[in-house]
Length: 274
Image 1 (cartoon, rainbow, N blue to C red):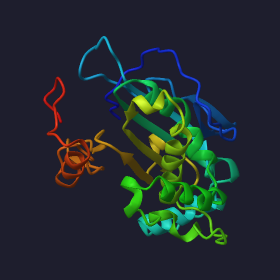
Image 2: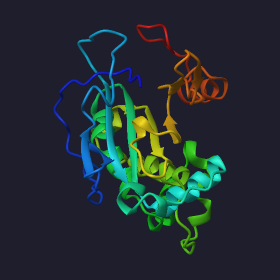
Image 3: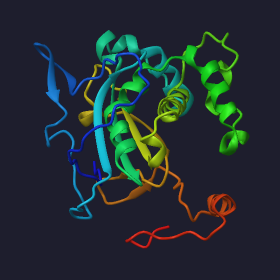
């Protein structure tokens, strides 16, 4: 796994919104003959990190990873819907069937505050959001208007009315978590001055008996992103598969929108990117 960012320590602003306590961990549970052992995610033998652009005096890029505990029924439905596979969490066991790996990369724009917020909070929000939040959140999105005028609910449509008892899918959970970030930061003065991209990968082992993500024979990968930070799937024989469609400033639809909003042409950064 290649994460093109590097950790630097910054002071972390206090944001006004809060969310429920999450249950994420900095280790992955691995079954063994004696029971279950904990392998720390920070070990370079588990997740590798490399910086490809050298050190910069002003760093706005961050990454984060954690294991989350998600509803096994939600994971079963997502595997069925997205991969056409029948996965039975009862064959894995209660604890290990809930375990997924969350990896996120965040590229700050105009400051580091939002990227830092994402690094510290997005995985917890991803785990703690609930379908009961959707009706109120959708109303907030529609009140914002502007860019969201065209948004009809997407993956959240089944739960907008508030009377759907079905479990969320991973697609709906990601959509909900991303909008919850926008809502949490919308009233904060620090967050109004900057922004960030967010690219997230969720790894779920489908093996039974259970195996950790790094040794799984069957592995479900879910990617969610906003912005131009890319996610690439690289095979052992050197093949590369893009997992995201870049939301870039000079893409056709986005460049038209930005020119209408700003009334001027786009500028480029020090690397020549819009």
